[in-house]
Image (tube, rainbow, N blue to C red):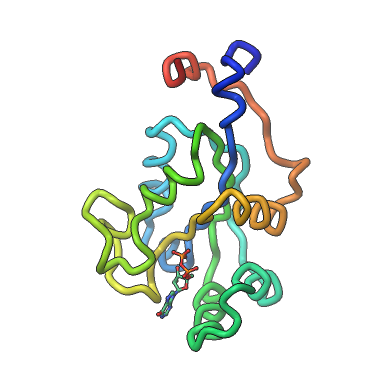
Length: 160
Ligand code: IDP
């Protein structure tokens, strides 16, 4: 990491991604992880877990007044989730773009939602939409001191 220039490390951020219960049931874990891994981003935290109602309500607190809030929490509780933290240059913005639009119907082919799902209420993956939400969501889902810092031997081939 010391060998990566300062202008790059300054922009090395982290984002929170979660493969939702439908993504896990549909055996998309490998396919989804593969995309971020091949892009060049670095996985620094991951767990397969059944999320509690309290955690999910807190995660989606900004949507508490939406008509679909309780349905959304039930959907997210309907099976295990793969919670992940990924790191890299502009990863929040880029991962969000790789995911596609919230509604899969508006997502272009080549994005995760464009390629693997049809309805907004079964949209296989969550990604933080801003650096602030990423910080909030990472600390909600992970003990940040347990995230794994590791040197990726290919970094020299990914960053200038
Ligand atoms: P985002 O996940 O793309 O950031 P949000 O507006 O934060 O989008 O919505 C969170 C999640 O709520 C979506 O990913 C989707 O699963 C669900 N959702 C959003 N809009 C609707 C809706 O109109 N009906 C049902 N579920 C919805």
